[in-house]
Image (cartoon, rainbow, N blue to C red; front, side, top):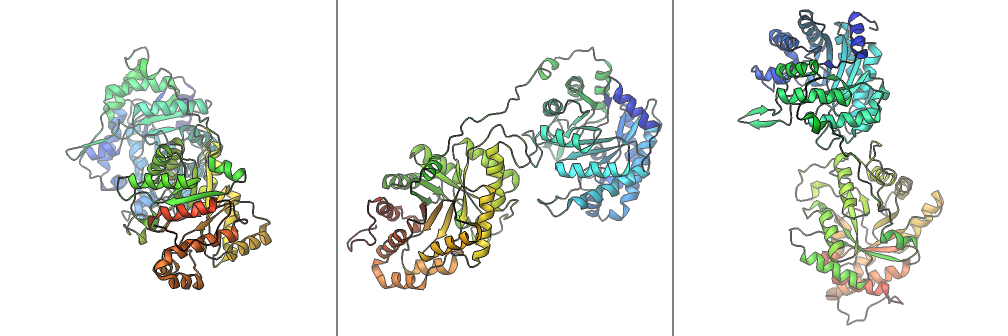
Length: 638
């Protein structure tokens, strides 16, 4: 239904005027204050209790607002289906418009009705199962019902997924030429729930074709003033709307209380106007009293408030800019052609770090170049590897490699963890899928992930190292991560492993750590197979080496640890060694190194059972001018 009417003309006249437009406040807060349960479907009240909805609209009209929103915030197919009301979608939305228009028609001044369109309540792909086309269709369905009831404009509000909001704008534009307002909600860190900055939101919403863009809900007036300034600075030609919550809610004696008073909102109304907002209103926690206070303030712009001198003053929004773009020591050593040695350590199970620090000191003294800190290996609960990395780097003075599994992390946590890692000076990261929680201490723990390893490598190398996050928004400077990837040289499906490695290289991997290898011919065979498909492998390989402790250890690794394949002849050799199996395991590791040293750029040593003294001896052999392929019979490895 693409047609203009006299009310659209009124809106255009308001937009051209220098005066701001006052919109209403919360509907849900008011309904709850009248005894409606939070668990009930507020949208259904348009049919089952229209009088209470009409009463609230009338209260806002009497407070002097110029725009009232329909009670249809959750009236889409997905949210209504939770109450088994999706078959009444059209009736609920039409009734919502009719009730608002009834209140508007009785007003002594011009009042326009905005059709409220909230988020769908389901995640869009790739973070959820709903495709963009399905979201578009759902928004189209609701907006078509609102327009069929002759709503004056559409307001797409409280969105936390920018792509979802864009689909809603597209749906509105496919149905009507009436004005469209699109606003997002922000978390306490001034980003959307999915990590978009105000600047990025403003740019994308403006490009989507919305007539008015802005922010609503969120933490409160002070935050949204800050956000609107950022949006205005980024897209100065846009028209802006701001509708904050009445502060951050608190639960007091079972009731949700919002702290911001009507007087507080009256002061911020002028601040919003001076910051460039054209449409000003309220969201959760605001009432007709808040609207009346803002009306009085906007009608008396000459009135000066004490708070204005503070909130109108310029804020220092200059983002942090990192100047540390030096390559890591590990990166420099590999680039210079040095043979590097890294050793895996597990963070402690408790909070005592004495043994970890002592082990790191031993490994440094023996000639290790870096310490790999695993993150919850075998899904067992341990200290955060970030803390372990920082402690080892600061107290021991050896560089670390942070194992960074994608499993169990959503896109927000991934990016936050990366920022934290860079901030504390941990720049070598090894990206891996991670062990499934089903095998660990907490098998019922969340096991989801938003990115596969190649996707995370791309995010780091092509995103963070270029100064932007997952959405393309600036992060305040370029990071200097050196990114490693996992590789199984003996994978059963070698063709797929080669393809995946190539994808990781294309994504920006800087080096690879391999699964433990026990047969030297596997290395050469893999390199030949890769070369046959993609040409000579230029990516530095750090060969995984795990000295076998005894026959029981070998049998366990071979049968229960994915990605590890120990030849039967090696197991037999360890078994035959009897009480000297540990010494034999060291001999086998040295022989393996001696066989492949010219094919790889380093080794990644994995101590069995935390016996760092064993790998220290192995490192000393590796660092010797001549590698001795066997140990003296009397050598001690304890």
